[in-house]
Image 1 (tube, rainbow, N blue to C red):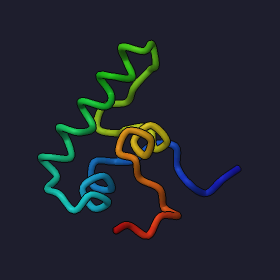
Image 2 (image 1 turned 90 degrees about the vertical axis):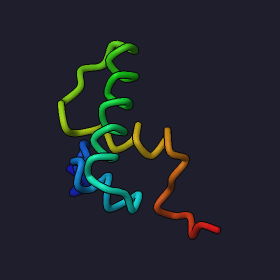
Image 3 (image 1 turned 135 degrees about the vertical axis):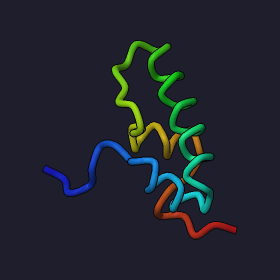
Image 4 (image 1 turned 45 degrees about the vertical axis):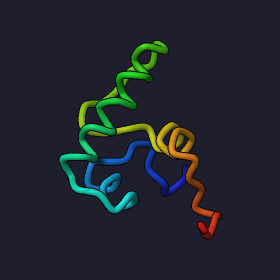
Length: 65
């Protein structure tokens, strides 16, 4: 089983995006709302890592720029 966790906590979202925790809570809430509308079960205060990466067009392999 992979070491990478399925869900990201708000703190990790804030750190990844370089934003405040309060703004990260808003993003997590929005993403969870979208997932719930698609029929997925969500966890308050956490967001599915793959969905987060997909929605923010972010890849750990990209160098940015």
